[in-house]
Amino acid sequence: MSSEPLAAVDPAVLAEAQTWVREAQRIVVLTGAGISTDSGIPDFRGPNGVWTKNPAAERASTLNHYLHEPEVRRASWQTRLHSPAWSAEPNSGHVALVELERQGRLEALVTQNIDGLHQRAGHDPSLVVEVHGTMRRYQCWRCGDTGPMEVMLERVRAGEEDPACRLCGGIVKSATVSFGQSLVPEVIDAALAAAGRADLLLAVGSSLQVYPAANVVPRAKSAGARVVIVNGQPTHMDRYADALLIGPIGELLPALVAPVDAGPASPCPESRPHR
Image (cartoon, rainbow, N blue to C red; front, side):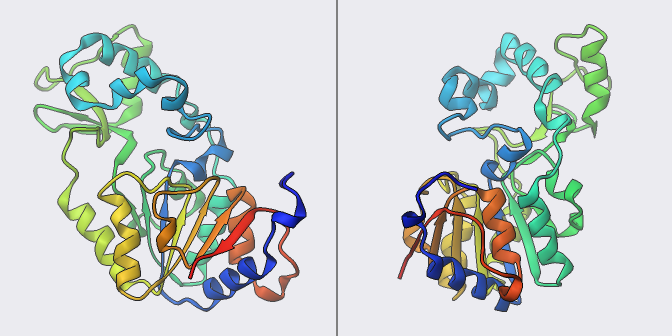
């Protein structure tokens, strides 16, 4: 239960959003790092985010620094080795989204996350669009060889500080999209096409300031979908929201997907309608 005063709650907005979710038949979900914080994985730009606390950490996510600075790569391998994502479990927010799929109303789940928790929660991988790739696989920058990340992490544990590709000697990184690296056009096309088919777009745990993934929101809106934004703080696209719910994601999502007759919702978030 949130500690915010009850006066900050607008039950009508939450109830209306619940009804929209319940009635929608083609729901597209866009998730960002905020959905995984309850699983122990910090976000990037939030008050306690990785880059907020340590701006230098962003260098490791920039392709040019990674390819040309061995010390950045060495630090990155240690970060990967000790990432909390390896022991993280899906939380109530992830599980709530699986319920939408079980009901047959999830058109697609577009995620900016690389942690793989949506699949671990039980989603059909064919419905998950990973616009920024996955940390669970590696890829050689030179020859494209790829495989499970655990293979590389074993080499790091064995003492290799910056393991190179065993096929060509090239630089190896996670199969994620770094700043300065081109996204896979087919993946972005799939995300935007799904948004164009949606009758409801649910944006969860994202600041909505990283493009082109954030374009999913205006694309869905222009196609006639209602937009519900759920986040711990305001986003850069709140103007598109038909309903804006600010509060604990792990409480809000279960409330949104619950049947309307399941009883009153328990979260106490700040919620306000956008018209």
